[in-house]
Length: 168
Ligand code: PNS
Image (cartoon, rainbow, N blue to C red):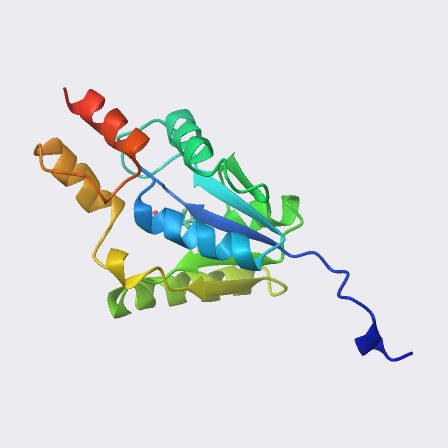
């Protein structure tokens, strides 16, 4: 019997790393797309950011867990140190990243090639979030929240509540 007669047994784990300060509807759109393609998707929250985060890491994780609870194959975890080391510890094969616009491409290319240099067996897979979110970033969300602007449609309702509470 040829190998084509057998189902594919290999299960693919993808790591979706980021700061998620806070999770936005753009991140969620990408998580939904990733969860459809990969067997297991781990959303990996970078613990120590270069800049002081608005939300401490455990709170970023908690919000992500709440808004991703509908997907049985999505997990949320904290990581620190080199991403490739974390990916190896998770036995993952793929790093998932979103590209919103051409402006994201240069930074993402640089990271993907550096991660490939560090771990040649890894593949970075880029997905496009819905064009509805092409202008959306966590940085702008933080700025709008700080200035008291409307956040509806940009972040999940529970994140909106946390942002409002933080700014109050
Ligand atoms: O959401 P962000 O801030 O764009 O995510 C950036 C992130 C977390 C993916 C990147 O900073 C990262 O992987 N940091 C871990 C440290 C590391 O491995 N650095 C080398 C990357 S080539």
